[in-house]
Length: 277
Image (cartoon, rainbow, N blue to C red):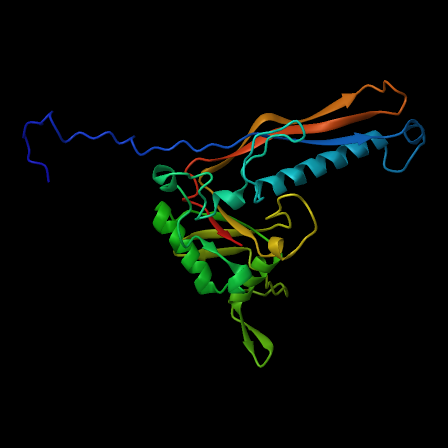
């Protein structure tokens, strides 16, 4: 305790609490998708309405899909060249407890994802409930907040968590749950998991863990990111999603592009994050 009325010693006892701060950086990445329609196709009455508008809407869907894949990627940031633009750092790197590219020294590494906050499903096999609880506990011990999370996860991870309610008995699944089935509907999908270390909402995704595109594989099926709901991860726009219609200057038909300039800002580094790979 503090002695009441004791005079302060101005020669000591005062400490600068900001000396352990670290500046975490990410780059802004530009995304584009183009659209077009030929003059003849645009002139014909077609089911579905204006073909240019249809083409534009599909490009917007593709752009939003690109953004999800970018945010959930393993990409590490890099400066652009004459042949390629800047790249941002995706969640695959921010959630890596061994990352030294974004956390190069001891001061930065104090904000790195905590050891134990990543479960390796690729080498460790299907994730058990104990594995999942240990992961959540590691995040809590590093961050100090039992908050709510979004688990953005591939099919294999979602299946693992649904399997927490099942026990195999002689090759037949036995379900352990309490549920009001007065409406005649038995719900076997786990959409929310409540633990001692936070509430987790499950969000299925097919776009985790890409770096350069490709087809869906085990790397994507096994990937999941635990993202806290307290604003520690923010999506920022240097330029919001916009459409740019271009003039038909060469007779090739109406065309245009959709574009966005985005980055993600982990305000507390990787400390409040978790991952499954």
